[in-house]
Structure formats: C-alpha cells, structure tokens
Length: 264
Image (cartoon, rainbow, N blue to C red; front, side, top):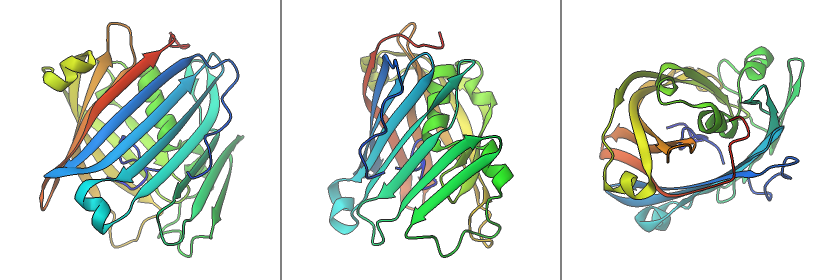
C-alpha cells in the first residue's frame, strides 16, 4: 500500500508533533487499532478520529513490531484538522513525519480554499516525482486522514465500494478506486468487535502524480468494511494484499465509539 495510507485506507501517512487542536465542539470520538501481519505480526496502527457539527480532526501512528522492528524501525505519525461542510469532512491542515527515518522529514499541507494549497517539507524533497502533482490536482484531493473520516462519517455499506477516493500526502497523489462489492459473513474477530453489514470490495491503488515515471503502478487489494453496531460508523475491518512472501493482512482488533455522529 502507499506509504501514507497503510490503511487504509487508507492510510498512508503518519506526524511527530502532538495532534492538532481539536475542532470546536467536537463530541464524536472513534478509536481504531489495527495489527499488520506478514506471516507474523509486524505493524501496529492506531487512529483517533474526532468530529463535531462544524469540524473534525484525527491523529494516526504506525509503528513496526515483532521481527520487523528488529530489522527496520518504523514510527510514522500524522495528524489533521478540517471543517465539516454540508455533512462532508473537508481537508484543512495535514502533517506527517517518519520519526524513525533517516531524514525525519516533516511534511505539512494546508488546503486554504479557492484552489490554493500550500505544501512545506523540512528537509525539502529533492524530487517531486515525474510528473509532480499540479496545484489543481492537489486542491481536488484530500489527505489520507480526511478521506478515512469521509468513509467513517459518510460511508454506507451500499455505496462505499462504488466510489473513488483521491489522496494527496504532500508529495504523492493517487487514487483508491473501489469496486465489486459483495456481502461478507462476520468472523469471530468481527463479531467480538460488534461489526455488522460487512461489505468486501476490490480497492485498486493507482499512481497519478508524485511518483517515479518508471512505475505508474496499479495494484488491487481486498478491503472489508463493517458497521460498528446498529448506528455506529462504517470502519475498515481488514485490508489484504498479496506479496511475494504471502498475503499481507491488516486487521482491526480494537474499536471504541463515543458520542453521536454529527452528520447524522
């Protein structure tokens, strides 16, 4: 999966500073905890989402664990904050950093409205890709955490697998195109978490801009969504992607929901 999504969805992505100031009046709080496995457990991912009538914010962290942590240290963090307009989360401020990376580069993206997007990277990127993302493409996209929030607040089992989502993380711009929805039976993990109305779909990751020209990669992964209880949010239950070593699998294993969805 792209480095900024890791989930999820999405989620790609992930900032060293403390999370953004909470949007005013936030009362909806969703906590998602994932474990990533490639034969054995190798990743842990935690996402905190908050929303109110007019604004939303989120933080995310991805760290390596188990055998992977012995050979490659990962500690990617991200945060965002934005408005909610007409019930739809909009991108605002987004920040990400790989704390364990050699450069420890911090990238921030500010969607200022009117087609204006400001990107800052410290240290700067030497290569912005071939081709680089244009300002128009950046303005039409959203950061990975906002896109995940859109699925959580606005997603419906009947439609989530029939949409395309465009992501921008400060350098790479890519599409995740959902298709082929099918209903799925809840396994023991999903039953324990209270997930219902499970829907599986193909998610095709398509590089658009900000990547090396020689790649232009497309790949298809399998994503399962589930609704948290009778009236809870739609969440990513699992992501499965084939690799030369076998299936890489990211599964939701911790979930809490507090408050009421402000977009109702």
